[in-house]
Length: 153
Image (cartoon, rainbow, N blue to C red):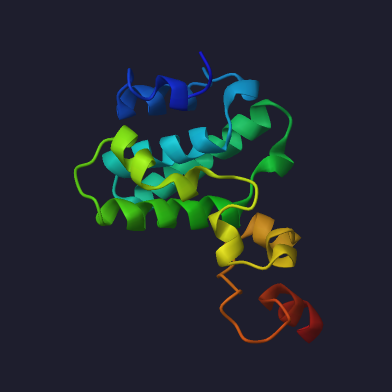
C-alpha cells in the first residue's frame, strides 16, 4: 500500500499514529499528503500542543532512523499543523476523507499554501529549519524577518 493516505479509510487515527511512532511506515511511501493525514490524526486524538509535540518528535525520529535529520523542518511542521487545526475548527466532526476533500490546498506540496505566508528565502533558512519562524509575507518590507535578524547581528 502507498503511504498513510492510501490507508486512511481503513485505519483509525490511533492505528495511524501507532504505526508511525513504531516506525512501520517505509520512507519511500511517506509523502506530503501523508504528513497532513498524520497531523490530522494527532489533532483528532490529542490537545493541540501535546499533539504538536508528539507529531514533531515522531517526525524527527522518523528522519533520524533514516539518517536524514536534515529533512525535519520546524517552521513547515508547525505552520501546517496550525493551518490544519484552524481548518478542522471550521468543520467539526468531519472525518479525514471529507476534510481532505474540502481542503485540497493543504495536500499540495510544491508551490503549496505556505507560499501565501512565507517568502522563499525564509523557508529555506537554517533558522526556519531549526525553530518556528512567524510568517513574513504579510510584511510590507522586501526583506524577510530572517534577513533582518541576520543584519542586526
